[in-house]
Length: 157
Image 1 (tube, rainbow, N blue to C red):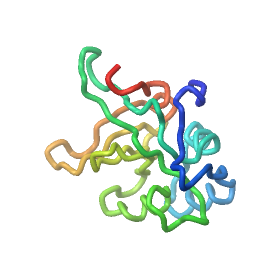
Image 2: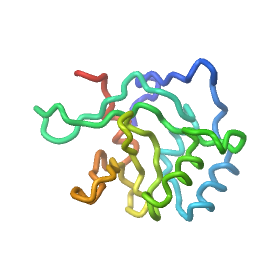
Image 3: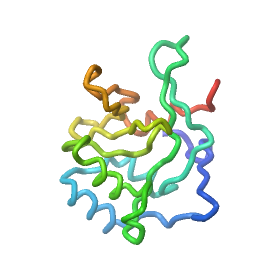
Image 4: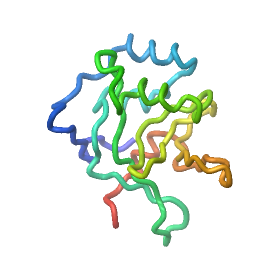
């Protein structure tokens, strides 16, 4: 995974910076949703624990395509703000009926679609989840969360 300083994570001014999730908070989340978060995603949470990346666009498909996904808001994990939007636990509970087992929302794309870790796969891949029965809802974005981070670029580049 690339140096995480390169993607320019910014927190909302009202939030400041969030402490990294504790081992207990991570274990509680995994136990509550009966899954294991991949090590590269846990490393990412420990680095920034949510925020808004300057590099937020992830191109997808053919190299000449302008299609892709935007990782606009990265979710955080902590127990003190468990009922707040953008909290991994809150978002997972909120979208439980849509997500089913093994899918964990990690950011949203700013257009109402979730970008999810598919923890039912080995290794867990990153997909965009569109509430659209015609496409079966899931489209792979990156093989792993580390690959997603490596693919992030500025919009329009």
